[in-house]
Length: 273
Ligand SMILES: NC(=O)c1ccc[n+]([C@@H]2O[C@H](COP(=O)([O-])OP(=O)(O)OC[C@H]3O[C@@H](n4cnc5c(N)ncnc54)[C@H](O)[C@@H]3O)[C@@H](O)[C@H]2O)c1
Image (cartoon, rainbow, N blue to C red; front, top):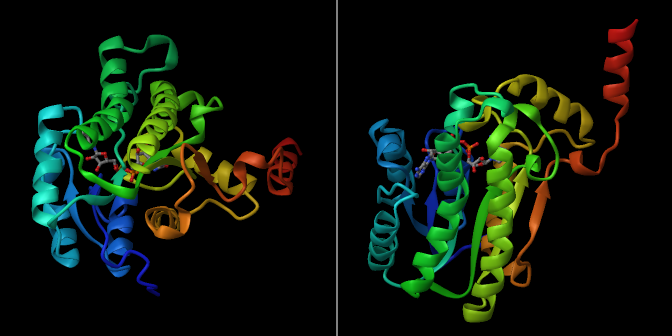
C-alpha cells in the first residue's frame, strides 16, 4: 500500500547488495512512495550484478562508491544532485563490514588493522558522507539522514566483536553530526537499531542463528523483519517526522525493554529438565 509519503523527494540509498539487504527493501518502498534516488554500493558489490535488477525496477541510476573514500563519495554526491536535478531530501547509510568477523577472530585476538577497517567502513564512512554533503551543500532543508545500527552498541554480544565499537561510534556520529546539520540546514540525522535480520552481513556473524532465535523469543512482537525496518526508514524520510533528530531509534519488537520472556523461561526449563 502506498501513501505517496515521499512524492517529489530525491535521495541516495547505499548498501543494497541483494534482495535480502535491508537497503533493497528501502529502495523498493521509497520507489513505491514516489521518491527518485541514486543507488550506490562498493565497486566490488557492483560486480555481483544484482543491484542492476533493483535499479531497473526503481528507475534508479547506480553510482559506485567505496564509502571509505572521500573522493568517491564526492563523486557520488555530485553525480546524484546532477542526475536528480537538485539537492537531496534523504540519504540512507546501510553499510557494515568487519574483516575480524569475516576471519572469525574472537575479541581477544582482534587484528588492529582489521579493526581500523571495520571502523572506517562501518562508522567513519557515515561521517565522511555527511561531511561531503555539507561541503557540497547537497541537502535540502528539512532533509533526513538515516544509518542502521544494532543493540550491540549498548550491550555485549560476544560474537559481534569490533562491530560493537563501530555501532557505538556510528550512533555517536549521528548525534554529533545531527546537531551540526540541524543548526546549519534543519537536516535531521538518526540511527535505527534493528533486530537481527537474515542478510549477508547479518548471517556472517558467528552464532547468528542462535541469537536470531533468542532475540525472537525475547521480543513480545518477535524480531522486526527487513520490510518493517524499511517502513520505518520511509517514515523518517517523510515530512511526518521533521522534529526527530539525534536519536538512536530501537526497531526491535520490544527486545531492548524485555528482561526475560515466558518463551525463554520455557526453553531454559526444557533444557534443564
Ligand atoms: N542484518 C542484521 O542483523 C542487522 C541488524 C542491525 C543492523 N544491521 C545493519 O544494517 C546495515 C545493512 O546491512 P544488511 O543487514 O542489509 O546486510 P547487507 O550485507 O545486505 O548490506 C551491507 C552492505 O554494506 C556494503 N558495503 C560493505 N563495504 C562497503 C564499502 N566499503 N563501501 C560501500 N558499501 C560497502 C555491502 O556491499 C552491502 O551492500 C549494516 O549497517 C548492518 O550492520 C544489520
